[in-house]
Length: 316
Image 1: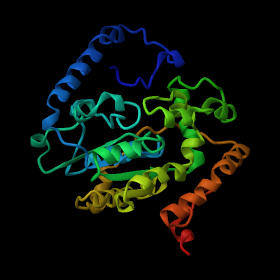
Image 2: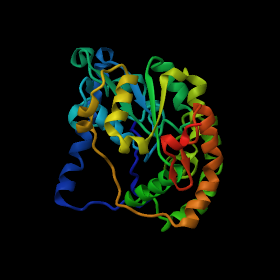
Image 3: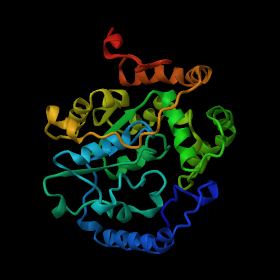
Image 4: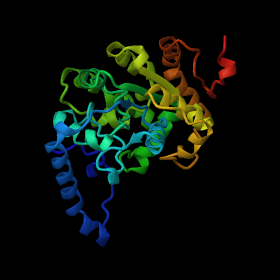
């Protein structure tokens, strides 16, 4: 069985005609399959993750994941040279089985006293990921980093355009099309755990910004003390502080100001602004969920329509 293809060519991705690409095309997938088969064959000697970074997509999860691996006491996935962030197992590759999942992690011997985790940001909004993860890795720490919901939705759209997946020529058009694109998709996913929805994965711009609805599933299956909810705005404003908060949560020593050396902003897109009327429209679509999220995590709301609410302004 093939792993899920996140870059389907039938959704607008142009084919690279370069000589290097043509030479590499049959070799690279074959080599990766051999590595994965070796990993699966040695699955009994491999660890499971100590933490899962579950999202949100375009919310800073890559930056936090890479920063953790760059800090002391944390190893990356196997093989290290691939620099994999996560295998997307509990969402789109679940049919591959546990041995395939274990094939992505170091052996007990290679890991030593370090820890390892994985980051698959679609876990947050996938309807079955929380329950599946709880069954296999019940002691794992769950980390969730959230971005202003309007900014996240816009960034999600822009990334899909960049990848050639999104063919609609404006964010406004994509928001207009979202309801029709997602019609019945979540219900089908819930009815059929084997179904993978291309539409929900790629085009759920506002839906994946409704964090409370997604986190409620995780809170239903996991003790709250095993879930850490962060804001991406705090990560970028105080990278060393948020890295230390995360390291402490997963049982590692803090680094203080030295931690800033491990934090690099990954997957940044060029600056772009949302039209004010579009910002207001999308905010109105998600603002109720922002209030629900505040109740769910027992804090004041994280954001207003204009941006993040400062810690001082959020105090009672």
